Length: 288
Ligand code: 13P
Image 1 (tube, rainbow, N blue to C red):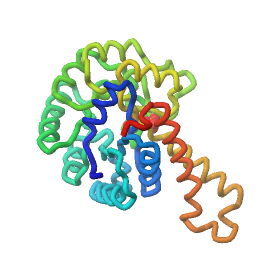
Image 2 (cartoon, protein in one colour; image 1 turned 60 degrees about the vertical axis):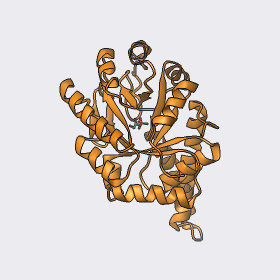
Image 3 (cartoon, helix red, strand yellow; image 1 turned 135 degrees about the horizontal axis):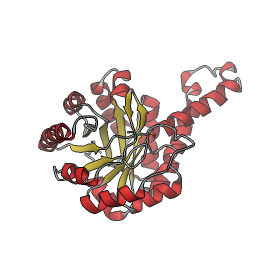
Image 4 (cartoon, rainbow, N blue to C red; image 1 turned 90 degrees about the horizontal axis):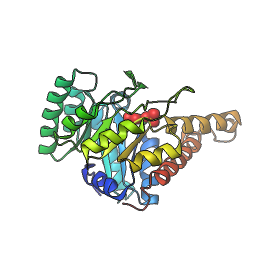
C-alpha cells in the first residue's frame, strides 16, 4: 500500500476510542522494525521523523524514498503515514517537497498570532496537496533534538482557534514532556485535557512524550480524546539496553558476532517488542 495521510486513521481512532502510535525513526533498522510490527499486528502506524533525524539520515528525500521502497519490498499493507515531527516552517515545505504524507508544524514557540498565521498557511498548502497536518499549542516540555519546551498546559481557547483552522490533529501540552519523566513529575493534567476536548470536539488530540507515561494515564488520556501518541525515547532505550547486553556478554567477539546484521539484531528485536507493547496498550491492534 502507498503512503497515506494520517487524517482518516485518526478519525477512525477517535471514533473507536483507541490511539494510533507515532514511532520516531532514526535509521533503516528502526523503520523496518516498526513497519514489520505494524503489519504483524494489523495496526495502522505513523512514522515520525524529527528534523534532526532527517538530517542524520542525509535528508528528507532519502527518508521518503527509503520508507516508500520498504513498504513495497516488505509487502506492507496496513496504513502507514510518514510524518514530520515538530517541524519548523521551512522544514514543513522541505518534507512536502520530499514526498512525506503528513507534517507537523510546531509554531508553539512563536507568539500566538504568528503561530496562527503560519499554521493557517501550512494547513492550506498541505490540504491542497492531500497531506495531513498537525499543529501545536502550548509547548511540550523536555528536550528533543535541540528543541526545548517548558511543559506548559495549553490554553483551551487557543486550542479551539487552531483546531478551527481545519488541522487534522492537534498537539496540546497537558504537562507531558519528551524523554524520561523526572521523579517529581506531577503527571498529566486531565483537567486541561478535558477542557481542550470540550472545546475541540471531534479533533483527534495528540499526546507527545509517550515514553514513560504509566498505562493507566495513557488509557485515561485516550478516553478523553487522545487519538495519537508519540513514542521516541522508549525505542531508543530498548535498543540501547539490548545492544549493551550483546556486547557485555562478549557476543560480538564470538564467531562472526561483529557482523552488523548480528550486532544490531538484538536491538532491532527490542524495538519490535516495545512497539508491540505500545500498540497493544493504545488499542490499535487489528484496526488496520
Ligand atoms: P518521547 O521521546 O518522550 O517518547 O516523545 C516522543 C515525541 O513526543 C515525539 O514528538
